[in-house]
Image 1 (tube, helix red, strand yellow):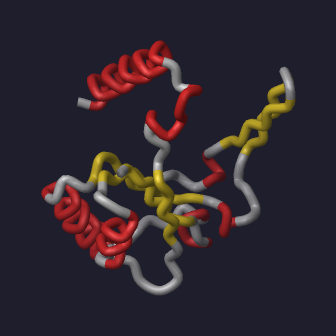
Image 2 (cartoon, one colour):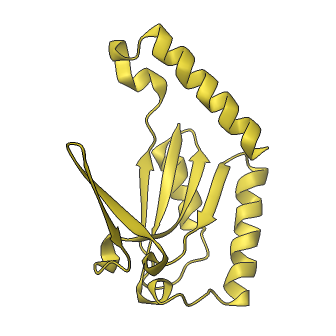
Image 3 (cartoon, helix red, strand yellow):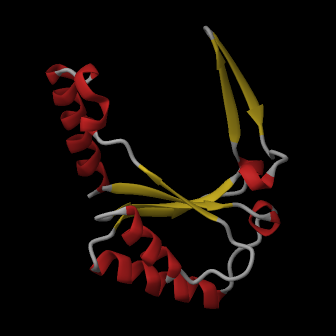
Length: 140
């Protein structure tokens, strides 16, 4: 089971305040543990929304809005992609993360090809496999 672990933004991350050397050191050690355990597939921090955009789709219309965005409780400042046996395992790993007071994290299962049922035809499955293979090549 793959899960996306979403780190919610706060006023400091939105202000562009970088983590301390101590937190970066602790996070590096935690990420190394995740990799050695075969859990972490990817993980990145995100710049504040002042450097981002939002795009709204309405029919054929595309509307682009420059950041920053107001509601920090709805914003992200980082993510991990993990491979775990269960949601319970993801929770146990997350409990070990070096965050302190006020950090909010969301864990959500990632859709797997089989989750789409009969709508995912053999042709669409083959296309999905090709896309994943190409993506892995670019990461490596």
